[in-house]
Length: 114
Length: 84
Length: 176
Image (cartoon, chains in turn blue, red, orange):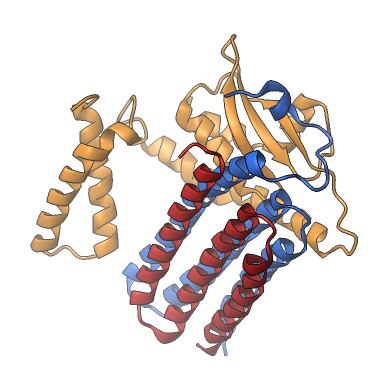
């Protein structure tokens, strides 16, 4: 157990902690918008830190460069696609679901830019 | 490294917690939100398991799982918006 | 084919070929030949969805360096701040918050659609804010409609500064 392994374990634990935060948010939040906001934690911090720990591990142990490239691709695809799906789902939920704490200000309903 | 195996098991436990919301969620949007998060956590579990076992084929599977989750979530979102 | 441009096709084909080479990670002639063929065919279909104007705009070392610097430093810092506040909110026992949907104005210098899309994606990717829509009024001013989970500021301009932070200024340096 040398220093690199400890760094890898700490990074992975940080990522899993934020994935846990996202999961807890999905379980605890009262309405669908809060759940969507909390689920972004998994996509941003969870993925970033887990992939970062993988990159540190692979580079330190001298494995093939293709593994690093694939990890970076997974990170880029998740970071590129998750906002799009979250945005589509949030708009769909805005049409169909009822917000539980009523929004204190709603410009979207007033303007209705369709 | 054994740490990665522990991390993958933690990801699977998070998956089980998310399944509660998938079965329980009052509306369809809740279920799909939880399914999207479940896809991401499964992809993370696959990444960690591939680092544990040293087989890079699991990385490709993680990529495909993440992309398919994206496509299904966008389709259901458009459907709920009544635009499909 | 409608809307087919040669420069857009070439730019997309180069991008696809780079992706192919990085994913296969080998320089065997067989791989290069098939990758080139597949990327040329794919680019013929996909270029009109990907590129609308100025096909070789991002193949510029200065812009690429600014893009990488933005992604690694600025965006990462914003994500860390938003995540820590989200973690505090989720872990607090009472779970009280006041959501709201705000219309915040975009930077008038940022005209490019790629830039607007990237700003709204970055806003969505920081936990606590989701962009619902971008719209344009009669004077050509762009607006984002942002769902903010804990509204601290109901004035639109100040709320825009609080949500966007320094992200929009840096993206404005990449896409004019």
